[in-house]
Image (tube, rainbow, N blue to C red):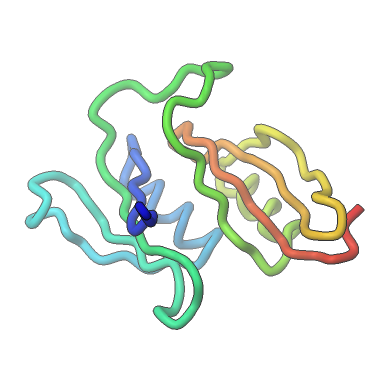
Length: 131
């Protein structure tokens, strides 16, 4: 079975993206640019004992997706403790709503956003009372 083990977020402005993901989700970064031969920062997204994966921010090699363009790739969804607080941070730091908060009845709150680099990301707050 092919298990997802790493992700890469393509970014235009590395400092802006490091700030966005660090502030919104509390990710920590390690500079792997020398190893990768380009601006490339490993993203530690949580404790190794928690379910999830780590990834990286890498320099985008072309233009970002145009608004309204269909998804071409994967959308990553990030588990959060407080949906509304996380949404406020996303918007405060320059992100935009792509698909507003909605209930996955009896399971969670879900929504999608554009990050500062034009990528679609999801946020997910488990909540058995969501409806």
